[in-house]
Length: 594
Image (cartoon, rainbow, N blue to C red; front, side):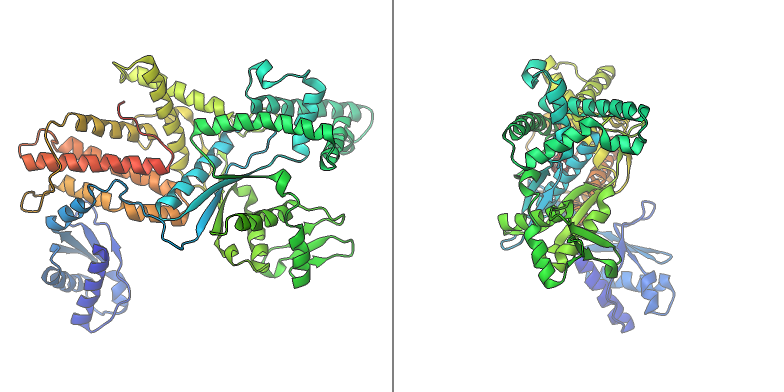
């Protein structure tokens, strides 16, 4: 039982003993900095049951706690707030219990618990990954790691959108204008080469539209009749029919893209346990259309199309099969979800990391799966996130105005290098060490800037602002970690001894730092429940601020008392380990030196 649970029970007992009234819950909050105390009981909610002055009620409960709870040493009441001071013995015992735990705050999976599958990235194979994909990947990867840290078994997956008209556009443009060039002959990453032809298709398409309009067609007709588009549509039909030449070209160009993607994923520091391909899943789900027709979940219209009527659930009617019998995206997603449970029978829920423009799609998908009778459908979650904007405006893939993921990663490292050189922090480093450190700082800045924001909010991304060695940034936290590691390298005495309350009186700054460390397990669990890396990121910033206040106000290695030196080194080391663990679940590295 946690101390807060013990305290809660004792507060309830105090109310029962003194007022003969039972209260179900006790509301706590952190004590405000200007008042003495470590935790505060909010008296106001009790006034519904206890008639009286909140200050007097607080005094009665406070006196009871001092008398009956060893850890409570004093209290004060400010209006309707009972501020409780906890003994040094409690904090020192707590610290001794966690100081040697390498994974403090993390839980292990329980036998028999269902696993969670987290989907993220899921790119199209017609262009390289861009800034929008970066937010998706960082969110999905981090949420998977946070769920793991909270005690869940996790599988990371993606569905690669490797078929469709958009893929054929790149293929056709390369066939027409590529002159046989390859990633090897051009020196370009495969995904960038293919992406260039996606842009080339759009350029040629627009030219053909202009020509048709000049010949008297309406713009709407010209868009449908442009020869290059008709040829791309014909290519898609050939692919679906298994045409040998078309399938061979598709395999070749997709292979280029996969090599490029893998390089980007490696640079970004994300990975997957399993992959699904749309070319293999787009027919999945059709068998469940017939099942749904039998059970009355779906209805066939006069033209042969099949629909699911969700109007009674506050949604609309959704098509699940076209009149010609072909599947739509919804059908495919139904089938893929079911297939994943077949492939991984221990999975009991899924998280889909997809932008908020797809909110309605996932409402419909989850509801249909529930109506089809799948028990696990109640454990599906759409990790919906906002767009990433740049100071220059929105990005558009077709027009080639996206921020390329690889270019951004390189730019972040270069910017980290410029700022580090200006600050003169890297004397004694070799060039290779500097370059590696710039990557760690640059990537850390990018990841932290994106992950510290609530997923649902839009982000205006400013690379320069993200690489600041002051404030709520990745480099500031990395620098604090490196500072602690520097302190630990200077220690010339043994500090393994566990101190007791007889050996040590806590300074206020030590107490505040321990209280911040106490919060970490709860933050991990909340971040998992809310699917929000922002909770971990901002907790880490608060921990670092608390440490820096401790560092600036209290001597660590220069303390007069040997026990103070030992305890403060232990405390500093635990803060460093917690920073490292918190950043690990965000996918961010911490450098030993900066």
